Image 1 (cartoon, rainbow, N blue to C red):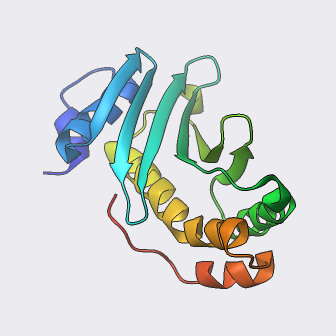
Image 2 (cartoon, rainbow, N blue to C red):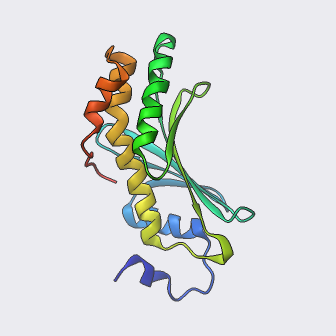
Length: 167
């Protein structure tokens, strides 16, 4: 039985309820922060990623944010920002940014569900796995630029191949 079939019996589903069910099913560590928000930890090959999904009824958007700590030396920030630009050119859905004050690398994506559309569990699972796989794919490039004295263009060579991890 698919994940969607589990929900066919319910009239109206909140997107975060679906995320919570998926997190329970996958045995991910999670915390239902509020009615409209859930935070979880998902293990990757390189590290554990913090993932937050939040629902905005006003915007009719499910927003996913995947973060991991990163504290590059200040003198490496220009190269890191150039690497982020190169990375985002390679990403079709979602984008990376670096939150300097929080010392977090962030990948974010917003799924528009306008007109009362419902999100399927398979879509949410795909959002989460894409976030983790994308972070896994580019993590080595960010590290090489920040700590390995590599130029952004050479660091990106390691991101050409797709990463395969656990999500």
